[in-house]
Amino acid sequence: MRVYIAGRLHNEEAKSTLEEIDNLCKSLDLETFLPHRDVGIGKTIKDSKKIFNGDIIKGFKGVDLVVALLDGLHVGAGTAWELGYAYANKIPCIGLKQDESIEDAFESLSAILISSMPIVSSMQELKQELIKRLG
Image 1 (cartoon, one colour):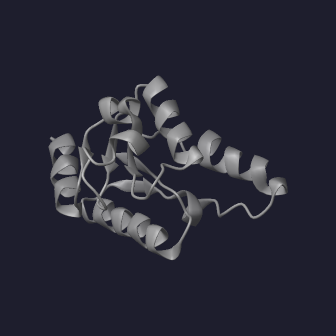
Image 2 (cartoon, rainbow, N blue to C red):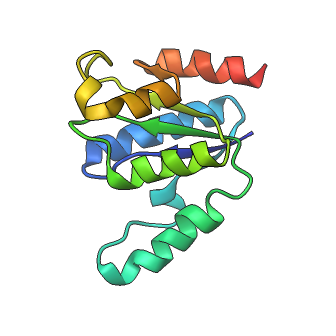
């Protein structure tokens, strides 16, 4: 199973959590695509095509599942786009929201995101959800 790991790259803590998700997936023998590791981070507008082609055109090839980090005040535009793209292409998604309850985050997450995928609140719950999908 190939897992695309989505999330904002706004700070080192978020990047560290994305890498923790990557390690969890690998511990379950899942292949991963981690955009900032596998393509890099865009620094200027000139990097846009490279990022889009790497993250979406190449990164989503053969993806069976998206795991999205949803921590923070708002889901990033790229993460929201990736989740919508996955949904439109019938790729299942799992959200991870550790910093507050889904009920408290209702406004910032939106009913659309909440209704489109299971959202777990810890790495342990994410592990259990991944194991269920491995069947």
